[in-house]
Amino acid sequence: MASKGPWWALIAAFPFVAALTTVVLVYAVVADRLPQPIATHFATGGRANGYGTAQDLLTVVLGLLVVFGAVFGALLQVRAFRPATPWLIAGGYATAAGIGYPGCMTLLLNDGVADASSVRVSLWHLPAMVAVALAAGVLGRLLAGAPPRLPHPESGGEPRLDLPAGTAAGWSRTISSPLLAVLGIVLFGAGLVVGVLGAWPASLGLIPAAALVLPFASVRVTVDRRGLTVAPTLLPSRLRIRRVPLDRITEATGRPIAALAEYGGWGYRIRPGGSGLILRSGDGIVVTLTGGRTFAVTVDDAATAAALLNTYADRARSQQGG
Image 1: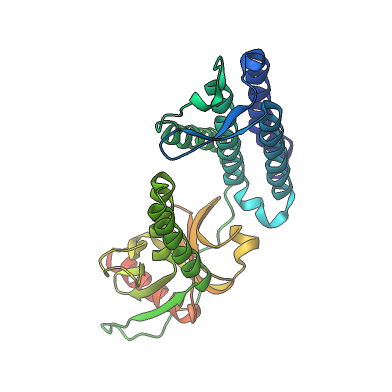
Image 2: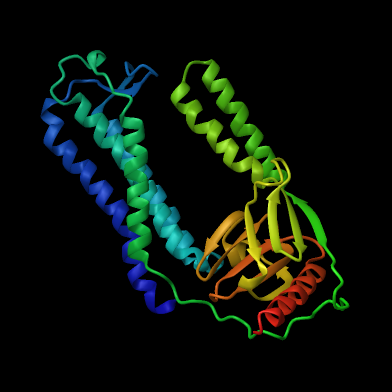
């Protein structure tokens, strides 16, 4: 990963420099045709309801780009975040686009207008901004490339559960994240309040965000003769976050997991060589898959679950003649 360091630094800095340059160029082109003051804020219906100078707008947008560029640059230097470097770069691209788009849009909407109160913004700009940010994020992820795959342990070295032939057993535990529960409730409540106040476009963003967060606040982890299953306890049992069948499992390990150092944070995480549902630091199951990738989930009594999973995986291989 060290060999990619300089390239990653240049790739990570590019979107913020590009967004800053674009905003400045747009301002330079339209500066002589802008009203004073310009419309800088818009109500739900698209009507202007806030005003300021073009210079103030430029200062705010450029300041945000500089600050967020510095934050992402600092995160890239933190060793704990290095496994997630490509995704940090993707987040930087999306953030830069999400800041630059409204800055340019506001300047262009005011271009050639005699009275700023007549400026209107179409609602299609919101999905357009989201689409531009997502496209920028995808571009950043592609430019970052795939980091080297992490080494994986050889199969056969982990404990097995002493389970007599023909005997079946099961293991299940529930793990919850109060932080995610509070976050989901806050997002849902904020969405309802914002919707009642009439700002429904913002509400349409907050409520789906809550729906995405809450299922991860409490999950049930199950190991049985079908493999490893992770399912949200707040939703019907047929809805699963992840199921790993026995024929995809090479080895399972129960060990301590450092959420920040190994996965760069909490929630459903994707990192080079694998993914995981990380709700806290501590005991967890790490499953090595047949393709070389890993899947991890933090849960209590992980050693027992991993041993049972290895036993079932051995049985499955012996039945297949492998």
